[in-house]
Structures are given as structure tokens and as C-alpha cells.
Length: 53
Image (cartoon, rainbow, N blue to C red):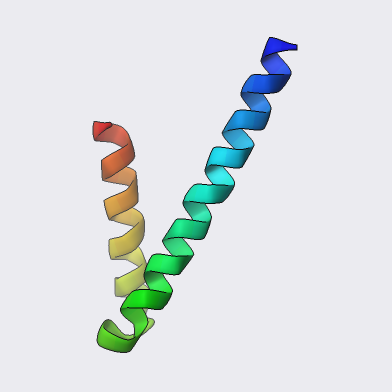
């Protein structure tokens, strides 16, 4: 039961985090474009924030 709840929580948090990354990319697209560099910066910021927090 506890292991299932842990897996479910991880899946939901991962889904929400990916949705926020995509939303951030869409918000930055008019100003910076939708290049690989923009997406790499977004993913880097999220990864660094997760490792610090």
C-alpha cells in the first residue's frame, strides 16, 4: 500500500513538473524562440532546482 502510494505520488509530481516545463517553454517562445538552446535552458534550470531543493 505505501509503496503504491509512493509510486503514484512520484508519477503525479513528474507529470505536473513536465507540464510546468512545457508551459514555461510556451511562455518563453515569443521572446526567445523555440530552439534547442531554449529548451536546454529550461530543462537545466528545473534539474538544478530539483537537485538543490
